[in-house]
Image 1 (spheres, rainbow, N blue to C red):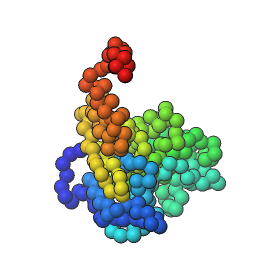
Image 2 (cartoon, rainbow, N blue to C red):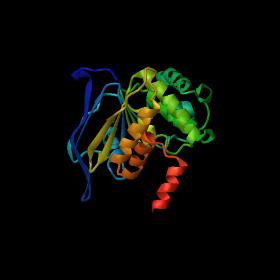
Image 3 (cartoon, one colour):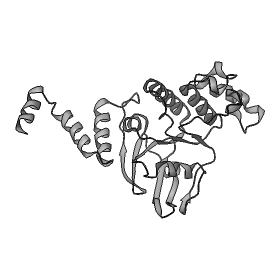
Image 4 (cartoon, rainbow, N blue to C red):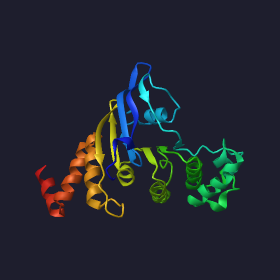
Length: 261
């Protein structure tokens, strides 16, 4: 990311708290992002990732604090949430005037579904359905895109293809993105910054250094992954990864260690 002025910063959440009964899910959380930045949210189940995203999407309200989002917010959920009685084009343009149909066709072409505009949702694969959901968000030209584990239900190969697609689209549109995921590798590969939520607050953040072509070098992926595993409470795995990188273990040394136990 390039350096930006204060005017390019978005203060999305200020002192935000959210309770469910006696359980405090978010505890005075602050979230600031740069315009055009991709931020991933990681954390254990119940850490407040999806709750925060719902607040940013306007689907819930905080018990304390303030949520401020720019005009134009697009949301993509883990499920595509398409209406089965509408074809693909009508799903993309739902809630928009008929004049938006040309833009919707462009959005479908951008996600590789130009030939699926008249298809029915039940005839689509999981990856195609998620691309329709992405087109539905894009056609609204959002300044802020929110993704709630959008690739979690996809198989590994489809997930990789979706990663490549969204990276191209984000680069083209320079949209600010907040992504919720449980996948550490996905967070490092897609995001400029990764935030770890714990106890309802941002407990740690990692900035990802990329090569000139935008890719993440293998050593950077390994280092950031180990750091994140450590802050997610998987200390042993993080330590093993760091050790493996620094001192590759030979079969002989494994046997020697077993003999000592």
